Image (cartoon, rainbow, N blue to C red; front, side):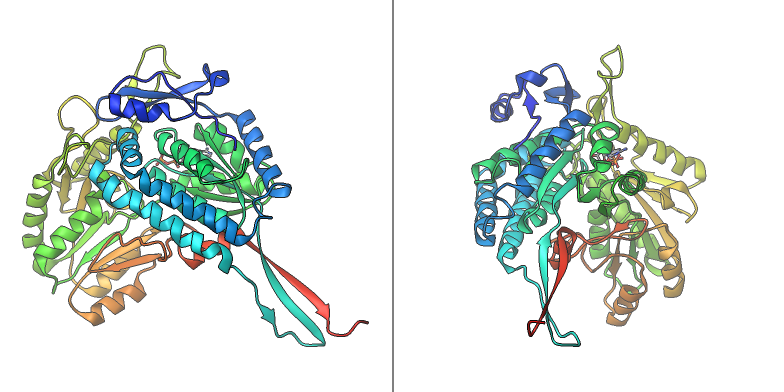
Length: 507
Ligand code: ADP
């Protein structure tokens, strides 16, 4: 296993410090590091070894060797499955430590990480561990005197890049199916949140994953990420992140070796509240669909369409709900919203400057909303002066062509739009370059069915949102992505189909 792990120059808090000490210290790379920060305070948590093109080459060589010569694809499927089950057990055992790393590095509420996300990671690995020995081909009834069969084989070395909003969950979405199918991996984490994947890699080693099978590189997009996407020895690429970066990945893959690519990209998902909806429940669900994870979900319900009959009541209650949202230190019990993650620009500046691209981007969009004439009902500014907290924000009177209604904000900003009838809302909801998800809130089964079929998106949540159990496929229409992850659909991303033809009689 190649890992350009973590160098500890960290300061407090001491419980977390002990946890970080478990991560491998790589003295050779001591000088080539970047700091990862605590978004609550802007303080440095740890300096992480920074992978560059040379590290990517070394990682790909290790993965290539482990695939071509190594034990992983040659182990029995049952043995591979047992490694993944053991890993899931280890994650479960270290649930709270891992959740603490996620919260510390990303800023998400600890309760959310500990009770929802880390258990989902466990579920995800168990789901795909169970598939490892159930992947098989077909016998094909072809014309002629031939026995025709298909073999479903691993593709080879998978390159994977993940974002910062759900660091370990995205690790699971990528790594679990790839390993279950017998591939080896080089995975690059997001520069904002490198810690949990490094810790998980050490647990996979403990679970018995052979050397070279999973290689985690911490590093930046234009350097480590681009080297990985353009590498000639990567057979398959999987990316989750912004649509702009997804385009770059596809271009790099095409210009290099035509590796197959799956992309899970941005969204501007409609959440449609119908005239018959129970308004209190609709408000709560729409609030959850937008504000969960600090509003940083690619499929967040970020265009709240409300039928004119219930619009005024909905607006008043949505505003009140946003004002009740508990924002604060994500390690405190009951907190619903933590700070937005950020980067440290020490590497690029003479001054020790701390900045948050994400935080500034959200505030910029709020400003656009006001300038475009939307009504700022509540929020619209940062909370306090320390850390990167943003007040839950609600806009009403939003028009379809405003930047806040068509571009991805990726923050706690709800935009509420009024509509009159079903055909109108279908047209407006589909009038987006994105097509990741949609929410529908109605008590009428005909309305639900009509909308489910008419909306050009990869997931429709009816009277619910963010139901993400492992078997449910996920992916985008239009510029929200290519391919599907999760469920049985996620397996085909990591398999080649080989046709084997044998005459029934020797010629
Ligand atoms: P966001 O704007 O949400 O940070 P990005 O698409 O920029 O989304 O980042 C998602 C992931 O893509 C991160 O791991 C990042 O390092 C990586 N990335 C960013 N730019 C590039 C690039 N040019 N080539 C490859 N990977 C990149």
